[in-house]
Image (cartoon, rainbow, N blue to C red; front, top):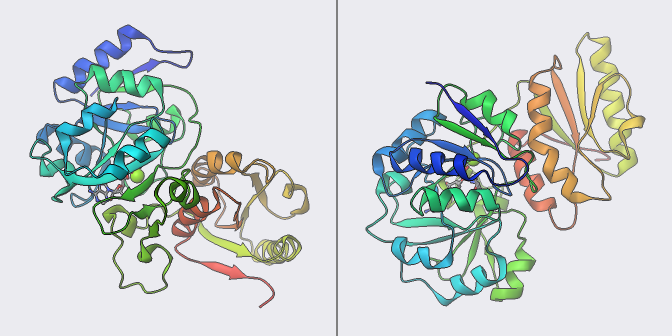
Length: 350
Ligand code: TXA
Ligand code: MG
C-alpha cells in the first residue's frame, strides 16, 4: 500500500483533511497528530475498520481503543449513564490530554472496546485532530500510531518508521506538545480512579472531583494485581539495549553511572546514558543524550520516547537513565520509563 503523507505543520490544510475524512468514512486508516502523541485513526463505529488498527499495529485484540470526539455533545451517542463528574471534567480539561472511561452504548462495536462494555473517550486538544474527527464522521478510534512494543510516536518521522506502506495516510503536524499519552480516569467504578498517569495529574483531577483513587496495580509490587486498563499490563517497550534506571542523589547517580560505564568500557561494551542539560557534561565513557532540562519538566516528557528510539538506532548495549521524579509530570514519566526498563532499578547508597 502507498502511504500518502500530508504536511500540516503551519495550520490546517482543508483539502488534506477532506481527503483524510473520506478515507476514514470508507473504512481506511489515517495517522494524525494530537497534543500527546500521534494517533492511528479509524472509524470507531465500524468494527471492520477498528479491526484494521489491530492488524496494522500487531496489537493484542483484548487491548481496547480510545474513541476520539470533536465536541462534548458527541459523547451521548457512544456512552450511557454519563455521570455528572464527566461533564465537570470535560469543562475543566477538554479539549485536552484526558481520557474518561464510561459505560458504552450499543453504537460502539466490541471490536473497538476489546470486548468490554465500557468505552474510553477523549476530546483532543489539537485542532487538526478535531478537524479530522469531524471530517471522518465524528468518532475516531485511535491508539498511539506505533507498532505494538515500540515507543509512542512524538513526531511524524516516527510514524513513518513504523507505518509507511501499512496505512493509507499520515498527517504530519510536526512535533507533539506533551509527548506522553493522556491521563485515563475511570468513572464507572465507585470512586473516580486513575488507570494511567499523564499530564493531567491526580492533584488537578482532585481539584475538580474531590478524592481520586489510583489503580493499585500501578503502584503495588504485587504482580498478581491486574491493571484495569488492559494496555497497562503490557511491557510496552523494551529497548534493544538493556535499560537501567539509577536512583539516588544527583551526585551519587553521576558517580555510579560513571563507574558502571568505565567497567563496561573495560569489558568492551558500549554504554548509553540518559541525562539532562544540567548533568550531561559530567559523564564519561558513554554516548550521552540529554532528555531536556530539569528547569523545564515538560521538555523531559516531550523527549522521552524520541530518545528511546534514538538509542535503538545506536550501537550501545546497555543504557543507564537518571530518574525524573519531577513535580507535575514525574509520575507519568517514571511510569513509562520504569516499564521500558522492565523494572530494573539500581539504588545508590544502599
Ligand atoms: O494520548 C492518548 O491517549 C493517545 C492519543 C493518540 O490520543 N492514545 C493512546 O491510545 O495512548 P493507546 O491505545 O496507546 O492506549 C489506550 C489505553 C490502553 O492502555 C487501553 O488498555 C486503555 O487505554 N483503554 C481503552 N479503553 C479502555 C476501557 N474501556 N477500559 C479500560 N482501559 C481502556
Ligand atoms: Mg499505545
